[in-house]
Amino acid sequence: MMPARYFSSLAFVTTALIAGAIPETGMQARGSGIAEENPSMILVDGRVFDTLSDAIKDLRPSSALMIGPGIYKEALILNQPGVVISGYGAELYGVAARQKGAFLVQKDAVIHGMTISGIRVPDNNGACFRVEKQDTSLSLKNIVCRHSQTGILSGPETGTVLIEDSLFERLGEGVFAHGIYIDSKNLVIRNSRFLATQNEGHEIKTRSARTVIEGSIVASLDAKDSRLIDAPNGGVVEIRDSILQMGPNSANADLISFGVEDKDQKRHNVHSMLLDNVTIIIDPPGRSFQLVHVQRGYPEPVYRNVTMVGGRDPRIDGITWYPNREKAGLPPYPLLPDPPDKEPGTGSE
Image (cartoon, rainbow, N blue to C red; front, side, top):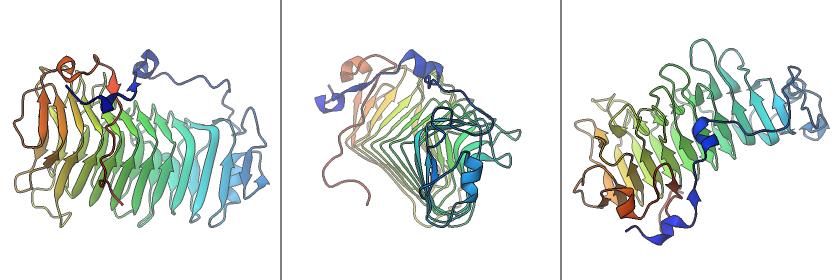
């Protein structure tokens, strides 16, 4: 039976979560972009604005934009470096700048405390966040992205995408869209949730040279998704202190891929994959699956203190296997345990 430390609390998947319900806010959207309940709470460097469109025009390098409570039918183009955006009950809904995304990030930016939903465009690549310019980095914290075609879409040779304490759910509404699709140099995910990507999209697709996922949950739940984590160009991939769950409707038998689109290893010079202190759950336990689909010529993953529940016994060093949730001491589907406690002396810098 799995150690009790896995169950400090349970992340109960409510009917509203499975149905993809958006919590009631008590506010109505206004096309003008004015926050319904507190219009005075749009500030740039302490100056008050009535609309986001006016506020954005006043941004300067390293400006601080504060967005008060409300549902805003506007999209933002960030072309000043070092901007910090703080949301306080603010949601961007349903509008994509230049038919691309709710946030078009063209210079380094830090954004926290925002909800983005309903982003859809004709080419099915509508993103809550789109990182566009070379070497541009984006840091997100306490972000919710839901009910859109893609959560984050970053272009080649962009800098680092950092995601902390955030939720990405019910994304992949476009054809071949994913929860997030990262082509930046580095992707770092900490303490976040990626749930129920739709239409056979991956929860996380990364072409980064280095991908780190820590303290997070990546789960199919009831969705018809594809892979939980797709790293088609390989690189260095580290998954630590996390929960991976394959659901009954997943369309792909692979949980993870590694190098499957780059057999000649042309994109990156260094390749490795590590799963450390990770719990893997297969629902239902008898379904067919492949833990990691590794392209021939790439190194096999290294497993350390991995718990696997369901499927067949992989008989791999570093993996402890249980035939089903009951034997592992887990509650029934769709309940998910919290991520395992971080082991001392591990993790990324």
